[in-house]
Image (tube, rainbow, N blue to C red; front, side, top):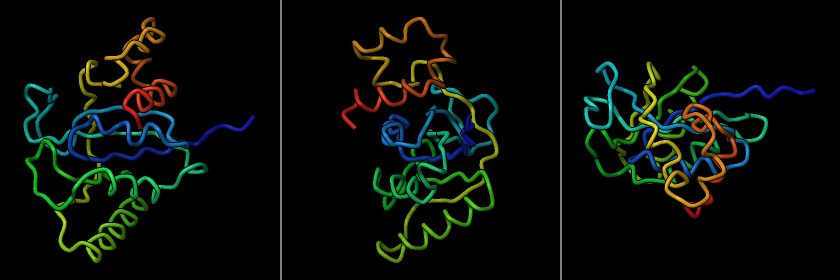
Length: 171
């Protein structure tokens, strides 16, 4: 039996409903949304402080590369316009390799488009967002019924829910 060795990637890409852009991809096993990048302890949607809405995902690097995830990041939002902290464009890296790839990717994108408002920062802490934000499109559809018996944590971490959420959103 082969065991998946998953890696984690995190992106600030505007509103965190964009988790569907990643959840639809083969190789992405789990998605969750939350808050990162700030100093405030225990941020909430009502009191986000200096954090950014963040999409975090676990992926199998044998099925999808970090570079492919970066391509989805660039193609899923406009990094040209400066936005307030909550919705800013940011790549949070988890490893030195991710940092290098993110910086190379940013440099390449700036060669094409000019200066961008995207930051590359270390992932210091990820605060999971409130349950009603997790798999938002699925949670608000008729197809949610098949997941009703799961705990909030099981639902948030469910591979199938990430895929169905993307389908419901039309991705």
